[in-house]
Image (cartoon, rainbow, N blue to C red; front, side, top):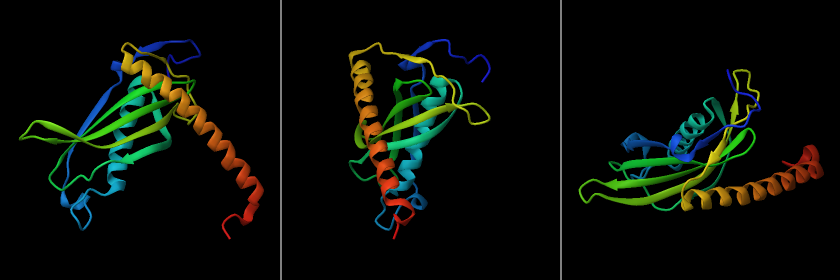
Length: 176
C-alpha cells in the first residue's frame, strides 16, 4: 500500500466505526422464519471488514472470528443493524468488535441479538502483511475495549499454540 511503512501513525476509534443495515427476507431464513446463523456471520464479517479496512486504509483479510454469541433470534421482516468498531490494533492485525441489533421501528427500540470479536490482518495486493496504525481511545468505554482486546489476544495465542502442539502429536492420523 502506498505510503504505508513501519512509521507509527495512529487513528481514533471513531474514524473507522462502521454500520450496516439489512432487512431479513425469507431466503435468508430457516423453516422457522429465523435468520440463518451463517448469514448473520456473513453480515458480521462484512461490517467488521469495513471497520478494519477503514482503520488500516488497506485491504484486510479475516484471520479469526471468536466469541460469537447468538443472543436472540432474528426473524423474517426484522430490520437488522450491525455496528463495528476497532477495539485494538497490533502490528499487522486488528481486533474488531461487532454488535448486531434488531430495531423495532414502531417502538424505536433496539434489541441485542448477537456479538462477536474478529481479527483482521491488513495486506497489500500480494497478500503480505502491512503495519497498521495504532488506535487512539478517547472514551472510558473505548479504553476498556482496548484492554479487553489485549487479554483476548493472549488467550487466542495460548489456544493457537495448544492446537498446534496437539496436531503435531496426532500427526497425519488426527482424523481417524
